[in-house]
Image (tube, rainbow, N blue to C red; front, side, top):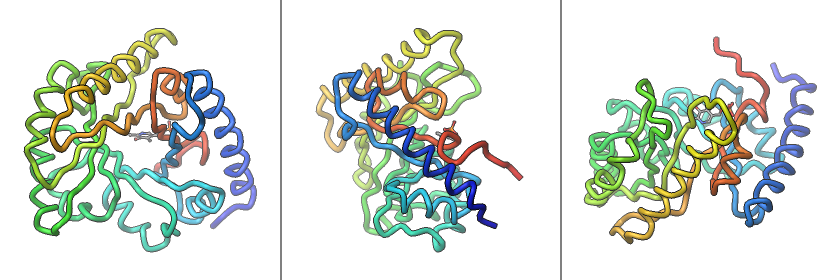
Amino acid sequence: MILNERLKDIEENLLELRDKISQAAVQSGRSENDVTLMAVTKTVESGYINHAISNGIDLIGENKVQEYLLKKPELSLENCKAHLIGHLQSNKVKKIVGEVDVIQSVDSVSLAAEIAKRSAEKGIVSKVLLEVNAGNEESKFGFDVSELEERVYEISEFKSVSVQGLMCVAPICDSESALRAVFSDMHRAYLDIRSKNINNVSMNILSMGMSGDYREAILEGSTLVRVGSAIFGARNYR
Ligand SMILES: *Cc1c(COP(=O)(O)O)cnc(C)c1O
């Protein structure tokens, strides 16, 4: 059931969020148009997602292949793109290739190889971001910054995959300066790779920042923030 009150909250949250994103963008020496707002829609019912879309959201992010494919027929995606942002298992690649505009969560060369294989079968080139384990946390997904460049060169060999940028989920940090250092390292890696002009690799998207840390991410150069709970409220995992 769709609650009117929650629809109102979504509208207000979006207004406030756009304002704050714009302020942070200006503070970082850019304009609001330089930062894309993605609405992260995991666990959110289609009615609320469509309401966000009718209030100007033109990019959504889903974590799970199955959940996204179930909701997709109910979503008003004529003027809205979708990215996969959650961990992707190899056996799900076949299902998702061609169904989203970008797969943001490529965290191994073998996953990139599988995406390339399935994309070639469908006659398409899949746009991807490489996920970086920004805080070097043991339990997290993503490439270590230290191996990133080497892996980018390996993945650039796959003709049916086009690397468009980097993505990270920041670790919990004790201080704002520690958090900003994580984002700043990401930005440096992004610019480093861009300066190499690697075939088949363009660095146009730096996807970092969520509800709790989008401001710091934008101040350090994020071009795409992935915001869920600050739009839709706390998630209800059933
Ligand atoms: C859930 C999720 C988000 C959004 O998280 P919020 O804190 O609700 O904004 C962003 N990125 C990824 C990869 C996620 O899984």
